[in-house]
Image 1: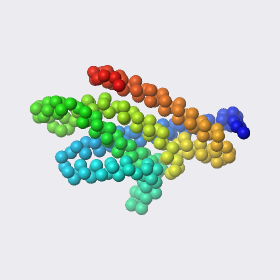
Image 2 (image 1 turned 120 degrees about the vertical axis):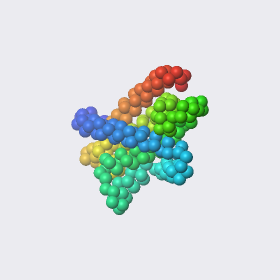
Image 3 (image 1 turned 90 degrees about the vertical axis):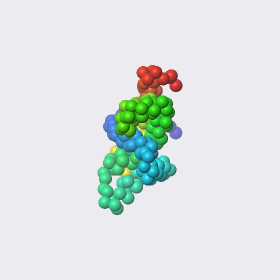
Length: 224
């Protein structure tokens, strides 16, 4: 029989809201790492140095082909065997950052390859260095094209933060599990977690779509 207890909800909601702050922080930090490292991966795969190109490509494919939860376990539990001991938070951020950097690198690559050939030729005719070519001409034009994919992966990171609970990070799902175990009631905490994720994910996705449309208008591109 359905047995929803509002008094219980009032008691556990403050703990879940506090954990929500940790979840949002984890998503922001993880995405920050992924966004920077993903661009590095994308540019490294375009270098003329064959060994670097091949190595980075293989690393990206390896990361994309293995589950995130395995990578979290590996960084946290296997790292100490190689002298790398990290806190659950640090291990979780590194694992999430690496995992999504491999996906964002492909988003960046598609955006870079979408820049018209004439822009590359113009940079070459002006004798611009590779650094100035990418930073001043190519990347600013590639970002609007890549923005939709980048936004999707931000929402994806937010929804994947519950995987950090496997190493004890006190995010939303970990807290819900703890509450359920303490009170032997899982209906309310799990339902609230689902509602909180929806309450954050849906408006965020809508905001990202509006931001993408605004960027494309400023760049003189047609809206999607």
